Each structure stands twice: as C-alpha cells, then as structure tokens.
Length: 261
Ligand code: FPP
Image (cartoon, rainbow, N blue to C red; front, side):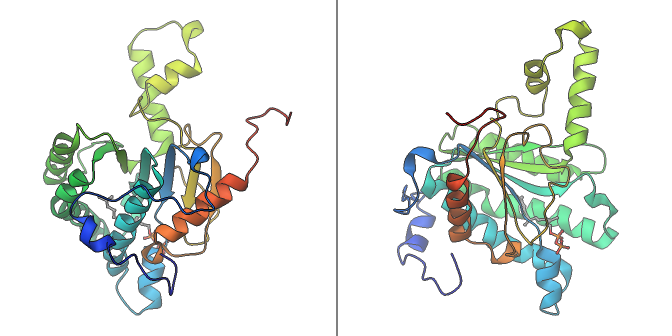
C-alpha cells in the first residue's frame, strides 16, 4: 500500500479467514502475472536508524511488510514468492543482531504459520541447515513445512542461511557424489540438484532500499529474471509497491538472448 492510500476496509476482516481474493488492479495484465517473484527485503537497519531506533526494530517492522506483500502476491495470483530472510553473509553481523534474527524468525514462524496455512500458502525453505542455525528454529521450520505442505495456492520460500554460491557448490557436491560422468552434466542436471528442484526460476526479482545488487541471491535461478529496484525501505514496502514492480516487469521486453520478431 503506497503512502496515503487507504487499505480495503474488508482486508483485515478477510485476512484471518484465509480468503484473500484474487483482485488484480485494472492496469495489470492478468495474463502476464509472474509465476514466481523473489524479493530482497533490504533496508530494515536504515529504516530503524533513520528513526533513532535499534536496527533490530527495523527487522521487527519488516514483518508487516512481508505479510502485506504475501497478501498482494496472493491477490495477483502469484504461485511462488521467495524472500531472503538470512544470507550466508549475515553471520558477519554483530552477535546481538544475529541472535535477534534467529529468535525473530523462530517467533515469526510460530506466530504466523497458522495464518499462512489459512491463506493456502505452502511454506518451504532453501539454504544450509548447518550447526549455526539453532535447533529450535530448525524444528519450527519443519513444523511450518509439515503444517502447510498440502497448500497449493502459493509457495512462500524462505531463503535462510542461503547463499547463491553455496547453493551451486552444494549442487556440484551432490552431482560429484552421485558419480556421474562429466559429459552427462547438463544445466538440467544442475537445476535438479538445487535446494528446491521444483521451484521455477523467478521471472521477477524486487530489491528494496535503493541497492542495485543481487547480493548472492538465487544466482542460478535469476539468470534471466527481470530485476526491479525501488528506493522504498523494506518496512515501508506494501502490496502497492509489489504491484508497481509487476507493472514495470510487464513493460519490459523479455528476449532471453534472442531477438524480437
Ligand atoms: C535486510 O535489511 C534484512 C534482513 C537481513 C532480514 C529481514 C528479515 C525479515 C523481515 C523477517 C523475515 C522472516 C521470515 C521467517 C520470512 P538490512 O538489515 O540489511 O538493512 P540495512 O541494509 O538498512 O542495514
């Protein structure tokens, strides 16, 4: 929702009833909605610092943005929505911030998983489950996956302790371990060994906070994605901004290395 825009008064009422209707703004082509949108939720720290708050308050404020974006994606009929919750590089942050993020992700899953389930959202994770990720969080991830596994309306993939290079390295390791001959290694085989082989490549990647980088996000999967960057800081991001990104995506000319007819 953009600044000054009024939210649909029925939205809160329907939110917990699991009935976010498919409502596509008239100027968005319903035939060309991306199947998969990936988002980098950047700018939480700056949002908080600008207000004289702690960086971690910015992450907490990002929760509302995340849920508004999820509902916006459901309204559009997006089937896959992927968010970058914690990168393999985020361990370099202060121990306090890392501890906060672990606890925050765990509590968010505990508090909101039922709501995601009612919305028909299937929750999945990509990333390394190494010893640094607290056991309680891993348990919460598994519970969220189990509770929502039958949902088909949309898949929310949470990239946690995720790095695009790490994902490619892990795929290569799995391929080498399988003993396959190098002549049999194809792009399809690599894709089949990524963290979630079912996940289609995103057609659109949105990054907030005015940073023009992909920062090790979905390196393989973003090869042909349209990239949209917005200055909005993640805690201020609302479904209207997602709709704007889709409008920009629909204005792009996707050629995949070919030429126009
Ligand atoms: C980047 O902002 C944001 C993060 C590292 C974490 C964002 C996480 C959430 C909003 C919670 C999501 C949780 C689940 C379970 C999906 P930044 O700290 O890099 O901001 P800055 O660039 O201004 O410092």
